[in-house]
Image 1 (cartoon, one colour):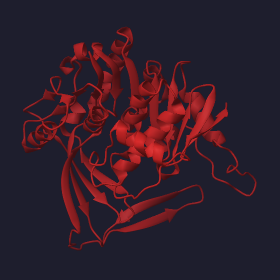
Image 2 (image 1 turned 60 degrees about the vertical axis):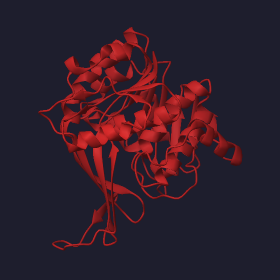
Image 3 (image 1 turned 90 degrees about the vertical axis):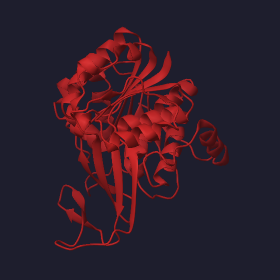
Image 4 (image 1 turned 90 degrees about the horizontal axis):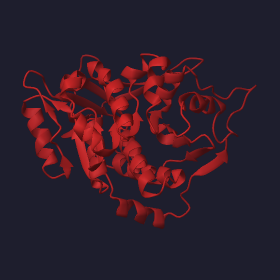
Length: 349
């Protein structure tokens, strides 16, 4: 029996950094949007370039294994130069790949990551085989023999297998951590609710939570001020709507502003762990998977698990690549000891 099995995407990521890239902010009354821009029609020099494996399935499987868990993975690739790169990467990782799906008629996922001078990124993604996982291709026996099923975002037609795998996991007493993706969210809350009901742990970012619940996060105005709340009232409403079962823990991440959690009794807030930012790619995968692993390690201590997840996520953003900066539990706990004042805040719901 494995500790965890992940299912999600696998890609070859090409990182491109260009000093001529600008960040343009477009503001409206109700919101602002930022865009990465390049001089139109120009030929620009690349400042830095690198290629690495990535994707939610790959990133989380790598992290779980790095944290010392017996890890298996399910993802789909083609039979091409990019799949060769993925398999070569895993030669040095302790991940069981016996459940990997390979289709010679499809192409391996491929992404171009445009990195800004601020460390954030815009991703141009070709889903490839990631979007075509079929129920008949899934190793259900491996899911049955795992303690935890971690579901990274599934895109395209692959999203159709969600119902079957979460129901199967529940029937076979396999815990589920669900990191919702936009494909499933766009199907509406009634569809998403049927998946949420089977998950013990649910992780979304703030934008995904807003999209899933239909609740917009209001900003401070002269008539209403929200800054004195530990948890914004609109976030509280998102949590209450997303928590459809008593046993669930819901987590909402908010990038550089930190992360929030709700277990039905308390709200929790954890600020970001301070550190350099080189690239934010993979930070969400590191946070969510570390949180799941930490709940088991620390006997469902949500505050300590949020701290561990934030520290590991900070390690990832300090490096170029989605898995390069991943830490072990020993390294995470060493940083906890070095930073005793870094803690979470909790309040009764």
